[in-house]
Image (cartoon, one colour):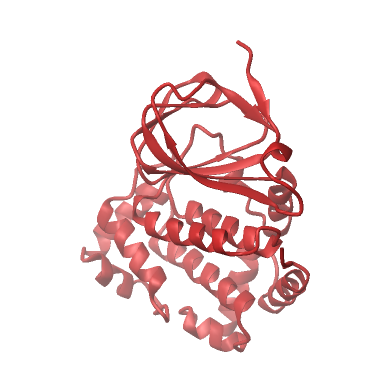
Length: 277
């Protein structure tokens, strides 16, 4: 079978950095293809049959997939997907700076199931489209948000899918203006007994509830450090850390650098990141 290769230069005119669209896939839409760029898509309305390397995989609304360059793939059925294409070098740079390769490097037949995050994905996509198309900051902000969501989702073949009540509780917890310490507030949001919550978290994510909430707290702290000028101890407190030494240790373990260095590095990146078309 002759598999064509799509090129980014045929879709993106410099200085713009990405091609983004909402695409209505119809029956008989076409065969397999490859491309020389990185790609991210999610199913907005499904179901859809996805064909990584010619093998059928059923996707539902809320399934998000990262596709690496040169990977043969295609679609069949009738569905609506949101698709963003961009240079492979952009993703390599994000991986080098954030160590965020896990979500990207998994095989494309391992979608991330995010039905509760469709609204957040839609908002991120709208922000991307409304921003400058030649802004590296605009593109990277979008990609990092999608990758952060993927970290809390369950790839196919890795644990059980979180029950809807657990996904809803995680969404509510992440949306709190100030993250409370401990696990009891989350258990209350979930509306289940602590033992049941703990078992479901372990089945879905392979970690304890405390570890999962620790990841959420550090991710939120990183977002606040990168996007504001609040004092570090105020950021730590607002993310549920009541001991500054513990916050520093947890942040460095998960992000690879201390909070202050993280903030300085992000400030340097943002200072040179944005242009105007």
